[in-house]
Image 1 (cartoon, rainbow, N blue to C red):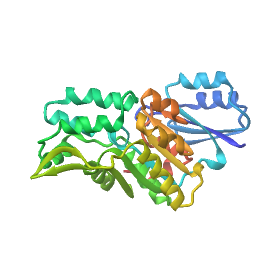
Image 2: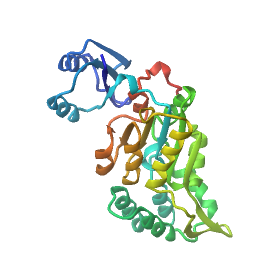
Image 3: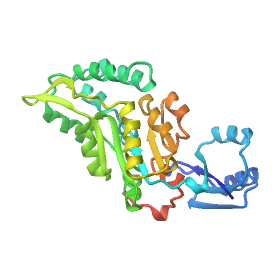
Image 4: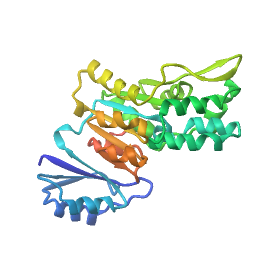
Length: 291
């Protein structure tokens, strides 16, 4: 047994069962399987390659999957995007909505995430529209509008407890990454700085801007400092600016990702929550640090 197929369903609505386990075990001529979490996540161990027909079938299921070499599935470094990945919103859109101008900002955000426009230019354009927003109102937006993605705390704290480095690197803002890191347990966070004066945003963002290059450079920095092989790194994100980071990691995970990011990812998560990243590594539910 050299490879593992991991099947992962939504823990709030599990769709796996023994029939599915037996079906895919037969497809792969597998000699062993194990539940990581009954009806939620399953490992099937096999040798050889998965045929196109099986991949097509997997792509049409109501659960997610990952195909990996057993020897390299465990990770010692996690890099994660924040907006629409670790949290369930785009903070800049929520700031704009607080000012009543979301319609002027959200379409720019989506275009940037799809990779249709330059990220740096799009960020400067959107931040300019936030000029005059009171710094005190950032706290209201965080408290009232920012919600963690299910599984975020469990993912980070479980990896921390097992000796991994966890890094939050975002094209968003330090005001939010700092608070999200404090709640979830990320050991390092990097993001853009919203400039302000006299208690109000100036409409400018600090330079240099955190973009896709920053994300992949952060990955390489920690890889070098921790003396890690590429296969020891897992990265997760959803947008075009995450692509270099996803490609640079041993396992790049597209989490409910835009098409370009999903295409670049090794694993696509469309059904499960963020605990999928633990199951991918072989953790079972009994290993989780529950949030």
